[in-house]
Length: 254
Image 1 (cartoon, one colour):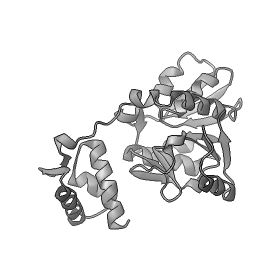
Image 2 (cartoon, rainbow, N blue to C red):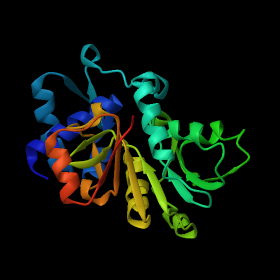
Image 3 (cartoon, rainbow, N blue to C red):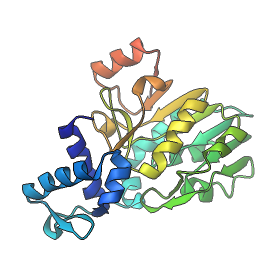
Image 4 (cartoon, one colour):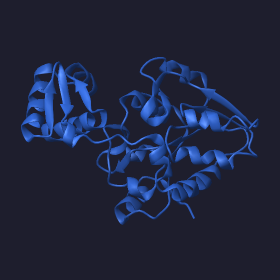
């Protein structure tokens, strides 16, 4: 990763987490301690950050509040509901599907009341919402609680996925771009998402129109690795052409 791009990603990571240690940055970005020290010194020199013992933090007057799951859930809720409805049309009786964490993927559940399926998920809100639906067989992967996404993320026990023959995955994203691919803000979840993409036969990406040309901390797959792109508006010609060239079915939710 080139220096300027790495520093920008480190900056985003620090803002998201308010404060981080040098060791955490070394692990997440796979760089040496000397490189991390030089990078955070550059951020400190810009004026928005300050060093603390063993790490770096956002200055109090510059600190960005991380939005809760509930806050994000009500944004563009009608659009997300339409996306969820459109995606549910591709789910059939007998499917074994994966439902990703996210405020868009959870909207699928309302349209599954008459389908006999098995759902593997790390989405805590989906699990709770599924309790009244006796037709849904719910399997949770467990793992480490990721509070900002109301989900389980895990850096271990990935082999549990090999026990399930998941044929369709419905994925969420912090942001999508052709250059950075499909991205995510949580390091805990990224390894899980990547494993699902590699294992699953059909991958559906559910994103509203505000997610295009945005990117989060980590790329969990390239855009050409998905099979279906489900959104609420026709994207720009660049994405339309990219989908056509890479055999990605573009689904516009009505």
